Image 1 (cartoon, rainbow over the protein chains, first blue to last red):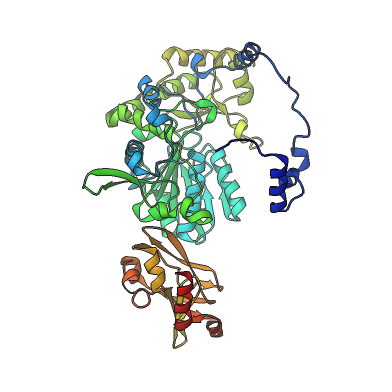
Image 2 (image 1 turned 135 degrees about the horizontal axis):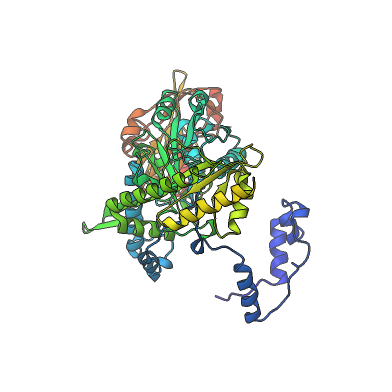
Length: 450
Length: 122
């Protein structure tokens, strides 16, 4: 097969067939002022050495997470990833494999996905998990759509403790499909009356635990209230390691559990690619989006693995597919699975304990700084502080001293009147001297600014 | 019994229409493993997707051949989807509807015309 660009005659023929005068007409839906009208202002050519030098200088302006005391969380967490993980995922059988449509040549990939699903189901306390979604926020949006299909209702109630970006993704999907969203105000106190928002038209309640501010929430009353109205509880987590320490969402009555799996086996990666975890009751499995690897036996009775329930997927059902997730985050799911296997159940519990202990130590140190208040009654490895100065300014000032102090809530919720709040995370990776340096820098900044 | 080109059938008795997929349709689908039926009371326009029949090969929509309101669904096929393979035009019916306009049936194929139609697509 030749692989040559199309010539003018080919293009004219295709445009005539489609019925448009020129290629620009295909972009009519994009507003003219959003389209590029000429070349981007950059040199047409440069030597490889010059490009490396320039891009290297640009990259050096970043403060690398690994080179500094780092206390940023809020949906993406810096954990230690054992070298074994990177070594194993780079085997070409894994690294270059595609969607395992052909079980006869993809047993390794299918078995990994099956093991991954088993781990996610055990972690979340649910019966069945899929072989991953793009990330936590899209898994959350897909869970909302799934609840709408199951209940034939169209209203989702979103907790004010849900990560604002997760809520934004759900709102975007609802906006496109014409569904209703009742979004409670972002509030660090975790005392919202979410149950009052559940009515007979409610399809699902979406609540996060630990919530965006780090609060531990008891999901059981919410589950009971939702179920009494025929609605489902979608439980969300952004920090998978927390499941090593707190009661699983399944045990608390969740119907669908979604979350971000980045914490286990995956680096920060500038925000992606990540791996969305998705689990539910078996009775909902046919409405679950995404791919599902299943265990079976071959013609000779030997154990094997296949993609199952794929009659609901887009390559068969086209636009009527349960979801149009094209490929899962297979490699990230593999990294998750390898790290989880290395940890084991005991290792995960131990890791969770260390995270919590480090966060408690940091909270104690920060609370001792005059003017600083830790807001959480209970937390896992992340908590929120109220500071006497705007949190965004504080973070900028501490960056100059090489400390990443956390996420100012105003970054994700500008204008919400929460400018004095800072979400702070501590993991196993923060050394005692990092925590001491943070508290000292904070005390110095606040003392000097008075 | 009346048929559509999409291989749904309607049998109309005592003012109630019983709707399902034809014997030809079940033979083409292969082993049916799951059936999703509409909720009671829902009103369909002619051509609306009303149910899903999933076999080992495909998940297919069943379109409501005539406008009407769902008054009964066949719980037996939900529990035992293979009933559709055994007897799709009998015990394997999907749902019953009160028709908005029974004269819509006149435009559908009767058994003789449908069997001729099947020969043209075989």
